[in-house]
Image 1: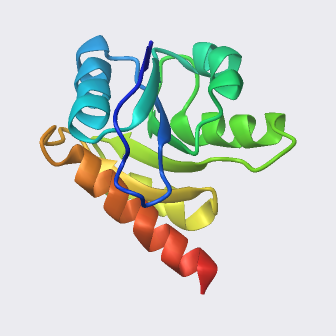
Image 2: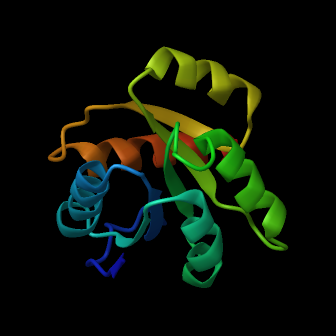
Image 3: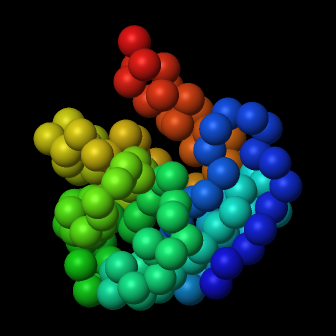
Length: 141
């Protein structure tokens, strides 16, 4: 599902692809990022759907469940990057095991952050922006 939000406050991040196999968590993340955060959001329930619909949406950021039912989040991130010819989106992992997510992040340069589940929907957009800004600052220096 695609939702269009208002300007995301000029930090350069506008389009976010959310991939989460739990419909309740996916819906909550979509509403938090779109309605509270102002992002354009495409949400998918599985890796296959994300790989099929995502490229036309052209996301700048992937927010992926670390353990999807059909493919693990880090593998989806790599598959998504490998399938593109242009700039690949950065990835933030959502996981109930942030410690494990951090280990994965340290070995995969495409993963720029890890956010724990459950998350606070009121602060999710701000946390995503913070990770994005930190990554952009680091990548430009």
